[in-house]
Length: 272
Image 1: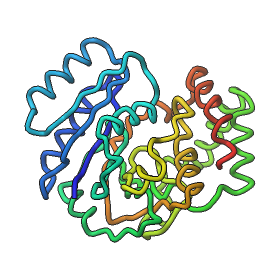
Image 2 (image 1 turned 90 degrees about the horizontal axis):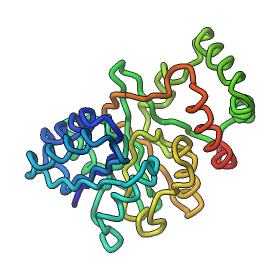
Image 3 (image 1 turned 135 degrees about the vertical axis):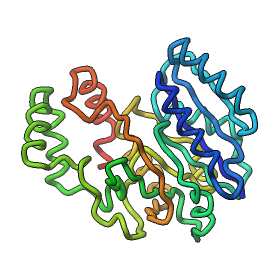
Image 4 (image 1 turned 60 degrees about the vertical axis):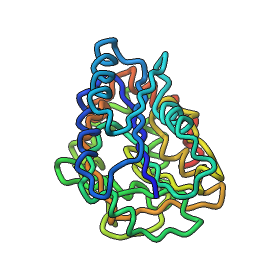
């Protein structure tokens, strides 16, 4: 069995370096290959990453520089293409954010899983520094009320700010609470987008990630890909990763951030 890692960097190479360094402590040999896709960071960032890769040549790291910022899933696709896994059937492909840290037993926990051919994607137990479990992100299809809340949020920037403030007052910020069912292995509708583990049947049946959005909403797109091809997404607490959660979307949304997420919502809303 081989293990691969694809992560995306954009102007935060120190975070990426911490992620890669955590793989040095993995039991069982670590990753067969690591691919870092840089989304057109500043020159100093690119230089630092290149130096780090050169200094750690034993880790078998490939560094891909994109000529522009192409977004999250598009960048991951660049890494998937570089691995040429279409004819392979004995691998785990870990894809995700660069602010992940891997526990030493990560590889061993993957080896203990028994997956059927209908399982295309594994969604791990993603734990923040505060001990919050971010999976299972969505177990079943969103309720009518939740979908209405999305519609209301994206009706205007002012409404988004009001709902964000109201959520803080009422303690309804879902990012600040562990997801229900995080201690139970189960098939789910959507996994949290910070980390996925793609299985050979995903690559063979689907190929690449749906990169219809630049950023945000990837969970819904991936879910649609998997289930429309007869596959399933398995959430398992047996496989854990630590998410440093350096998100730029946790506070009051800026108008630029809001516009990006609203444009994405127009594309993925039909899959919620």
